[in-house]
Length: 115
Length: 114
Image 1 (tube, rainbow over the protein chains, first blue to last red):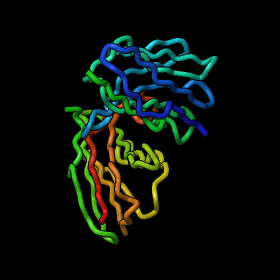
Image 2: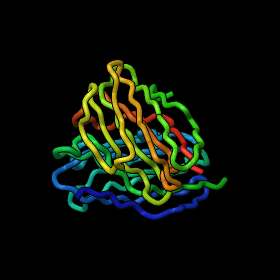
Image 3: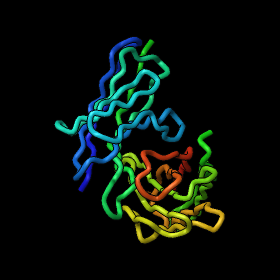
Image 4: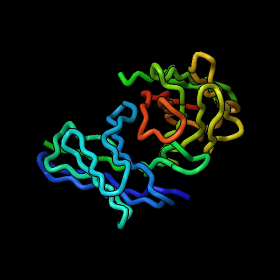
């Protein structure tokens, strides 16, 4: 079945460092891909999305490009801030049958940014 | 505020008990999804309702059930609770029941079974 694999955390960076969180997926067809962020004590917020191959999603300085040839959707940010400390989840949206519209999540990557 | 309201925010109950979690979707959204977030299983899809009808089922235990009412709010019922049911339960809503390109989550209900 469809699945998402993202890099294990935690990831600890200094402020202004470059961030990459790897995400790869297994799916039939071309599902929409998402990054969600969960700040401490809060729910999930949609960070960015891409709905077809070669699309680049971007928001708040974060970017991710839908690469069908490598089945990847890596999250990047050029200069992280302390306020970016959170757990980041990569997800795909099922497109077939009963899984249509449902999200399949990776296990999450905890990011801590130190001043 | 995401527009999706979940109550209660915290719930502590004993093993064997039954609880009900409530979700009010964002105004205008017809579809409601329930997810469970636990340390060992991560985020798992439980069940989806669209305009009052069950649309899809995921890894939902038989001890759990849900429904969506005519006013579109949804309830997740958890019975014969076990220690392993302790988790964060999220509700999400979207405008449609098909491909949505992302949906809106509530802030969750943290269930602790003791």
